[in-house]
Length: 99
Image (cartoon, rainbow, N blue to C red):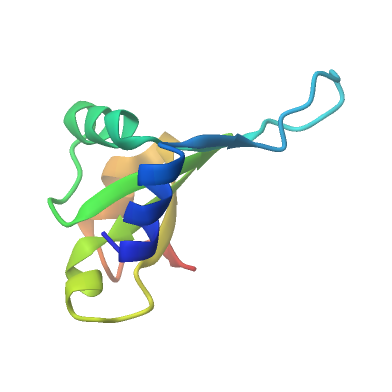
């Protein structure tokens, strides 16, 4: 994982962004803590180099650890939880969108 994200986890261990009590507000962003990252990886068949770090509605944000190890800055991807299996068949050139 990127050192900046490790530092974030040490300070906050996850977060909920844009949470509002109003019924008219969209779903908040959930930034996963370490336990949620591990749990998500165990519950879903992800390639070993991918870590889910955030969720908004049906969208999941992933870190590609192999790209982090290579020193690349293009290590974030998004995918839909509705069709994860289809998206990862061709990863990294599949349906995932690089952020």
